[in-house]
Length: 266
Image 1 (spheres, helix red, strand yellow):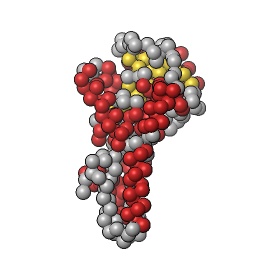
Image 2 (tube, helix red, strand yellow):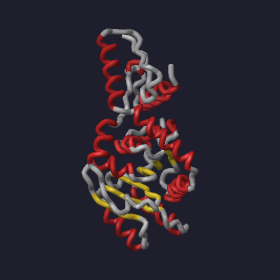
Image 3 (cartoon, helix red, strand yellow):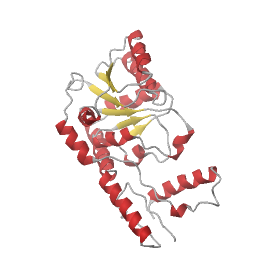
Image 4 (cartoon, one colour):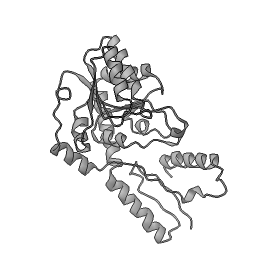
């Protein structure tokens, strides 16, 4: 039985226990297949829908990319506040490029104007087909969120798998159970609710050696491959087929690191 199974089984058992379902649900009959990304579509869109942008195409700056909603739950304010810290430290070659829209956008744009933060640009909404091209041009992808108890059961954001597919490292401030960034060493999770911690994480990547940075990129690629929809679909088919056939033991190839091995008893 793989370590992956033990991680997921523990989370499931903890959740079921907290919900008071201990005597009603047999955890051994629960299968978990995570969210993922369609790599064929991602790579095709990256070539077909090229996003041309002065900031993205500037080879002289270190580009931090955020894509997605700009609402209360997304806590993009920590990203913007970290840019103030970065600027005050004198790093003029780091730029935050934010794609998306939401209720907090105008408030954050005003914060940038009031604090003269010229290292942050809001690009607004774009068609999702341009996201692969946008992410491929960055140096570091970032996602943030609120510090809530729910995340102790894991995290499976759509953007996280797009970030993996871009083959660039990711920085997060969402502390969660079964941290995929930590598992693959494809990024770093810093303290929640702290712009200072985000700034430190950004500077870690900014000052990182080329060799170590490239290792993070390779690991992101490996994560994307493991969470490719083709692998996840094959796993779902195996689960269904083994269930229909009434097999007493179900096991997936342990080399598929994105998948967790479970036993099923009829």
